[in-house]
Length: 324
Ligand code: G3H
Ligand code: 13P
Ligand code: ZN
Image (cartoon, rainbow, N blue to C red):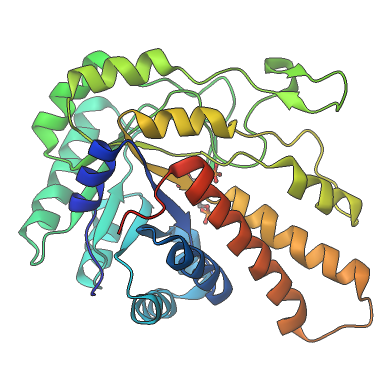
């Protein structure tokens, strides 16, 4: 099966009450871990590539690795541009064979966001085969490539804007801001309560009222959540027990993501959790085997942890297992 766009995947996910995992790829081991996990779970999957990933690994390597994964697994896989900053990067990716792109003008004024998104949609939809376009309304806190939005400067999506935005842009899916944020430090300690027994921070709940209002206004329309890593504390502990220093790292609780996946959320973006799992595997390996210097040994352990994590996400959070 060749790479696919996200249209049919999202229709099935919407109607089936689950979400597709959109996992960020930066190297071969990450691509393998994600797609082997998806294969074992019989799950569709989205592999997404940021501008930072393109800079790190070179677009041609990423594209070929994803094509290899498609051939190796036979899965329906979407190759998606994550956080395309302008028309040019979206066009580049569409021309290079991506099956889906995100145009992220969420930090721009409403009219400008509409104009640029519309331009990308016209180009993407004229492409044969049709390339799907994700757009965004509202801004998340955290770091995306070079853009850093401080906590407090983020803004929730305004439900009253979404119908006009989707109608005028023609986008295929919409990322909204309901309290998630990028990175492994999603909430400031003062926004959280602290579990007295474990000392772990418990974050404030997502704004399900906004999600529900948006989905009422856009019935049947796929919603996307960025910044949806849960910062699983088992990996944070392994990292910290093996020389790391991640203090007060906190993410979005998985039960809230499961709930969102049952509603209109069809795509859930996960990157930081993969980074934590990879780092946990490598740190643990170095601590246990200080004499090792073959990268296949320690990166192999990192890859095994990422695979285990992706299987857990597919089965226990996204609910996309056995959907092929
Ligand atoms: O949303 C951001 C993603 O986690 C990508 O991060 O820009 O460091 O590749 P990156
Ligand atoms: P996390 O940092 O929560 O993994 O979010 C990733 C993301 O939104 C990629 O676009
Ligand atoms: Zn994102």
